[in-house]
Amino acid sequence: MSANNPFARLPEAASFAVTSTTVTDGSPWPDAQHSSGVPGGKDLSPQLSWSGAPEGTRSYAVTVYDPDAPTGSGFWHWAVADIPAAVTELPEGAGDDTGSGLPEGAFQLPNDARAARYIGAAPPAGHGPHRYFVVVHALDVESIGVPADATPAVLGFTMAGHILGRAVLTATAETPA
Image (cartoon, rainbow, N blue to C red; front, side, top):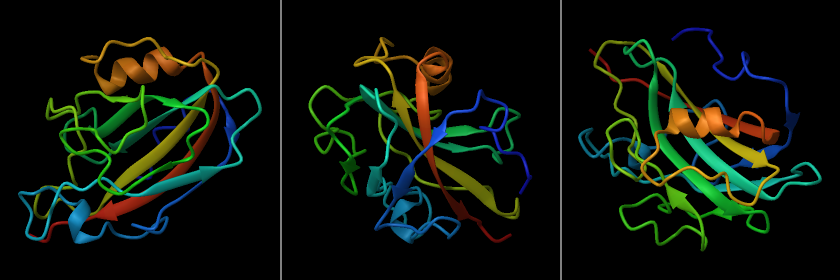
């Protein structure tokens, strides 16, 4: 696991709080948040609640990113755009194939497995611990304006000039050799 914080290179943004009944910041993912290809894994997105977003927040985006994936570019597990500003919680499982747990207007972008849903942790066996940055981005626009088939990287690039605040929770996972 590298000390690299992928958000340290971005312009500073106000900090606000994100919590989860699924996982505590800095703790390993429960089995259900692992990929269905991992024993016990269910590809179940975590429950998230956030508070204290900066004044002027007009929408949110949520991303889950593993910078430790052996790809040279990390691995995006989940991206949700256009969450209305009045919404401050996503239930566990909101990131399923249907997106029915998402608020009206919000949508999922394809992850790095090219599925518009949450895909759970599955670090390669023996690769060591991986970090999963679960981030709620507070934005100054009601809609970020990316197409539904955009990548999470395009979402991040498009959000760059619109981020008012960032709430970060980090989970971990490791697959023994």
